[in-house]
Amino acid sequence: MTQTDSFLKGKHILAVDDEYDVLETIQEILEQARVDIAQDYETALEKIVQTRYDLAILDIMGVNGIKLLEECVKQDIPAVMLTANSLNPGSLMQSIKKGAVSYLSKEHLSELDSLLDELMGEKSKGRPTWKILFEKLGNHFNQRFGKGWKNENRDFWDEFEKNWEISKGIQERLRHKKNIIDKGI
Image 1 (cartoon, rainbow, N blue to C red):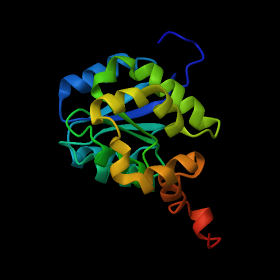
Image 2 (image 1 turned 180 degrees about the vertical axis):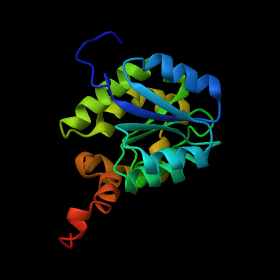
Image 3 (image 1 turned 90 degrees about the vertical axis):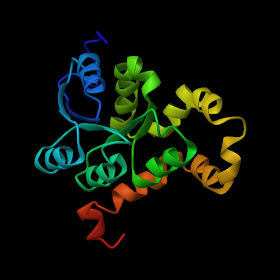
Image 4 (image 1 turned 45 degrees about the vertical axis):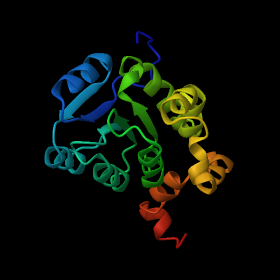
């Protein structure tokens, strides 16, 4: 991405994946940002706790990405789940419930910069990132998961679609905000 007004320009990002070639690709694609990498849970956790990142990109499999997501939420680091092997409705729902700001297939890795730029730009304006993701990649999910894939968990998806801006993930993030917890909200 060569735009000068990119949201990603100058941002500090952590990319976590057990496959080094994926990490190299992420670094190349996100050349406008400063990208730290980690190939395992322990290294990633140490970096999350010790460094203030603008964004984390977490593989679900191989590095315990869901557990790392929980740590990112505690540290108020927006996290995007990136997966190939765990691309399924269950991991998508779990990512939403645990507080991820997005969920991307490694099939879309070549578009990572433009997708993240748009998602995080919208997030910075207080707009719901999940709505944008489903507008952009909804057809991809439908093709991968099959027709009617949301029907198995209809209550979750109905509630989710009614509350784009107050999703379960945002609620989870708010539970870790000290200034909100202190107010008893």
